[in-house]
Length: 188
Image (cartoon, helix red, strand yellow):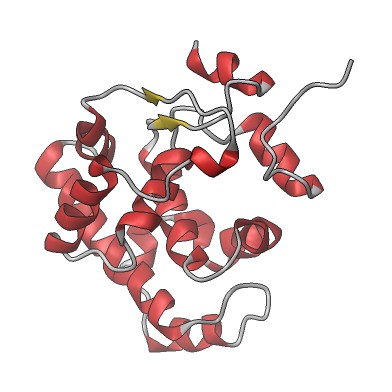
């Protein structure tokens, strides 16, 4: 019997991501920063495009090491703009650097980015009960609040839709369809 899955996971990388990462609660600051970077680069693009370039992003951005990224100079920016393995968007590259700086400030204020970001869901995964992919929203009141607060703190490319995608990736919401084999696994 074939396992039923969420309809969006069709390509091999999408399937692996869906089956192993999507919706799994993340509390590691490094991984949270990675999702923040990748979701910002996704703006206007498909998640499949980002997943296909994920390893290139990892190499180009020093394994998403925000403490190194804050020190990127013009030479490093120019190198990134020439890297065909990533999305060569000047605004998104600059946003990654400024987001790393804002990320560290949040860590200093809250003890960790994890403490801060999970406060938008009161430290718990919001478990939804969608039966059809058409029901899954692009934003929520939580992503609206997160977006507003992140922008106030100097983060870029953090609109409510990007924040909601981040919440899905980081397991702050479980948006697996109730018919999906991962729904119960992620809910445990």
